Image (cartoon, rainbow, N blue to C red; front, side, top):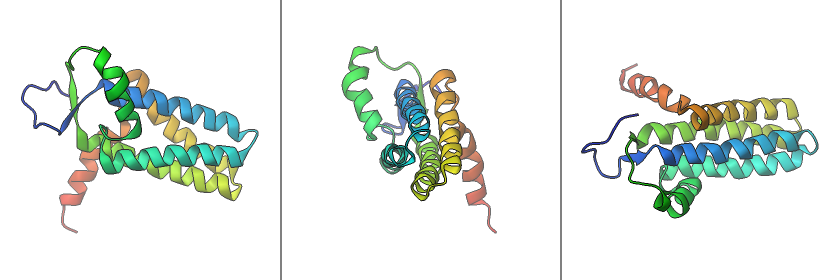
Length: 154
């Protein structure tokens, strides 16, 4: 995370937006895990919806994701100007990682593999809670390593 002084417009976002999204994601994933104990099918539907949210966040970026749009419309106008911003690309990568775990969990729940679905949802929950509560984005931390590996010729 960095304090924006003159960053490229559109390439930095207010850190409060992704943390807001992480709190919603945390809540959704907690509900998924609770529901999975009673109805894996219902858990798979809820997790499928979260998977779509992750996919949109990865494809469109944090501002145009469903939770980002909710933050921009309902929360941000009530807050002061952002003091701290962070780059968009690591956040998009983090959403992609969340998408992968949520997709694995969704498929597992639909297939009746409740334990696998719960573990995948649990990993996504851990990452979301870490970001929401402590401002630590695991996907953002992994992003530079992946970007560096993509630049290295095979």
